[in-house]
Amino acid sequence: MAIRPPAVAGLFYPAQASRLRADVDALLDAAVGPALPPKALIAPHAGYIYSGSTAACAYASLRSRQGEIAHVVLLGPCHRVSLPGIALPKATRFATPLGETPVWAEGAARAARLPAVVTSAEAHAEEHSLEVQLPFIQRVLGAVDVLPLAVGWADASLVAAVLASVWGGAETVVIVSSDLSHYLPYADARRRDGETIRQILALAGPLAFDQACGAAPVNGLLLAGSAHGLRPRLFKACNSGDTAGDKNRVVGYAAIGFYNGPDSENNGNGLNDASTDNHDFANWGGLDDNDSHDNAV
Image 1: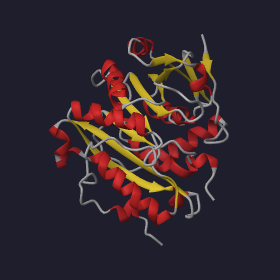
Image 2: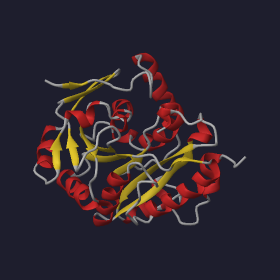
Image 3: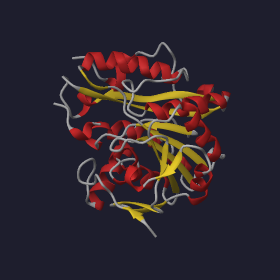
């Protein structure tokens, strides 16, 4: 049994289990999100002091699904290794200070049949975009398995084909890990990220890599979401200048849910209208307009 150990514990999130558990639970308890759980999510992957509150708004929407969701398809960009295509891990379990989560073996076998899907321990060894999602998954969903996919140079159709192979029903949720713009001044980042979020909410890919570091998996989700009739909803958006960084060079974050069919338009389902084109992005997180760090990304 091969275990992928945590690579960024103590850097992006606490290495001590009790503190990590308390921090994640506190972020979830403070999160505001819709009552209706989505089929798919976009969540950021920076250090928790930067983007944890935004990620928590994504995961809080899944709390009512504990015991119902069995499989998490988790996609994130490959930051450390040049990767053509998409990489499955060699490991059969992923560890965090909170314990081990098994890799979804059947899902991995399905994905492995597709072209440009490889198996690479190297692509996963130091990849934080997937790892930082795991403590939230462990606290919110409990005993599930995950299909961790490191996405490199892959077009939207390839990512969408992989998603189609493991899409499933209510037992499966898709989570794409991505931040938004990187290292722009605060006001420029808000404008840029507002444009990107509107594009996502319209399912209007493709995004460019300067819009989102996870553009490749996000573009695949947008294509798959369009094919499945999903409707996106913005839960929260901010940047590192709103949380723990300065405002000279910021990184943007958003939590977005994707819902099945017309029911997501029903105002009685616990959703708000944050996804509409007239949403006031100047009021992200209730904030006004008044040195980046490695784990802000």
